Image 1 (tube, rainbow, N blue to C red):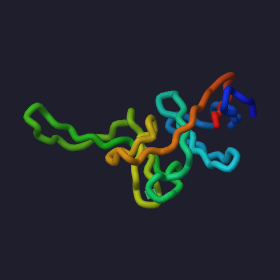
Image 2 (tube, rainbow, N blue to C red; image 1 turned 45 degrees about the vertical axis):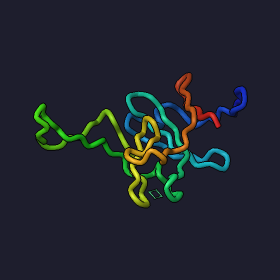
Image 3 (cartoon, rainbow, N blue to C red; image 1 turned 180 degrees about the vertical axis):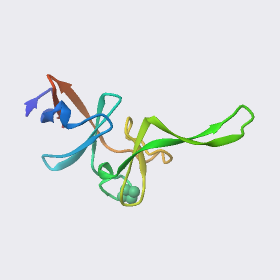
Image 4 (cartoon, rainbow, N blue to C red; image 1 turned 45 degrees about the horizontal axis):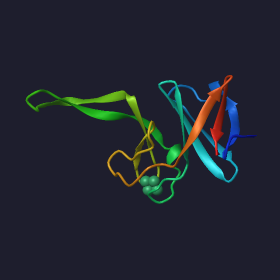
Length: 127
Ligand code: FES
């Protein structure tokens, strides 16, 4: 681990260990952290659901469901939005946006995020 100002850059592994739309769960110190890649960018969160402490980062990764609504407000079925991926906590189904850690409907629920860096083909989480 390398020290940055007040945080430590913990080496996680080579970049290819987290593929696009993939995830890696790692233990760093006394924390378990989920690392995701969406649109080429990495996101890292503590694997601890703010609802009741479940392993939120280990849940199913799903695209957001959007409804097709026309100008007259008529619904024309639903579609998956592959640009917005969510992770669903396996304990009670809380659904979080991977790009923000925010619960999709409850503003008070947000995953605890960590900065994550990719340099020289390697991934580091700042803890
Ligand atoms: S602990 Fe995650 S949804 Fe309840």
